[in-house]
Length: 111
Length: 116
Image 1 (cartoon, rainbow over the protein chains, first blue to last red):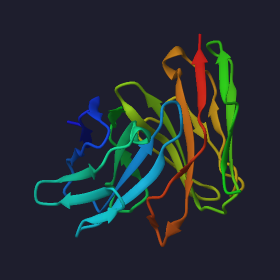
Image 2 (cartoon, each protein chain N blue to C red):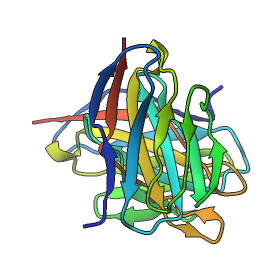
Image 3 (cartoon, one colour):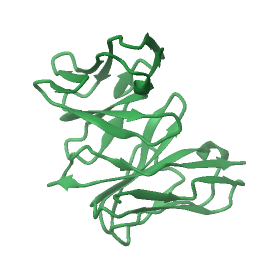
Image 4 (cartoon, rainbow over the protein chains, first blue to last red):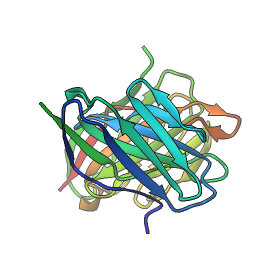
C-alpha cells in the first residue's frame, strides 16, 4: 500500500463547478500536510498547507480528518486556470525531514 | 529573484556515461532535495541534505550520488546511467524551522533525462 494515495483522475468539470479531491495517508504519525499544484511539464508549487481545524484561501478549502487519515481539497467556482494536477504531500517522518508526495489528481476544467 | 536553478534542462545520453545535474539555490535554504517523477509513480525522493556536508538517502537512492560542499549547491551525479534512470528530475530547497521541514519546497524547473 502506498503511503500517500490519491485518485489520479482526471476529474473533468465545467467552469463554475465545485470539485473536491481526497488524499489518504497510511501512517498515523504523520504530522503535517500540504497541497501542491503542478501544471503540465512544470515544477510543483505549494498551494496551501492543511491545518487541523481546516483552512480556506479564497476559493480553496483544505480539511484534515485524522481519525480517518485523509485530507481533502475543495475548489469552488472552478476556473479554466485551475486545470492542473494537485499533489497531496505528507510529512511522515517524525524527524520532519522528508515530505512524501501522492501521485496527484488531475483536474480539467472545461468551458 | 528567489529561485532554484537546474542544469541541464534536457539531456540525452547513453548507458554508462557519467553525468552530473547541477542545482543551485539563492535563498540560503538549509534543506535541499532531489526527486524523480515518473508516470504512475509520482514524485519520489532520491537524496536530501539538511545542511552542508550532511546528506541522506531518500526512497530511491540506488544509482545516484550527491554532495553538499556549499550551502547553495546540491549536484546529482549518475556515475553509470542506465535506461531505468530515464525520468524527469526536480531539485528543491526549503528552509527549516528547527529540524522540521516547513513544507514549502521551492522547485527547480526540472531536468528531463533520457538514457539510451
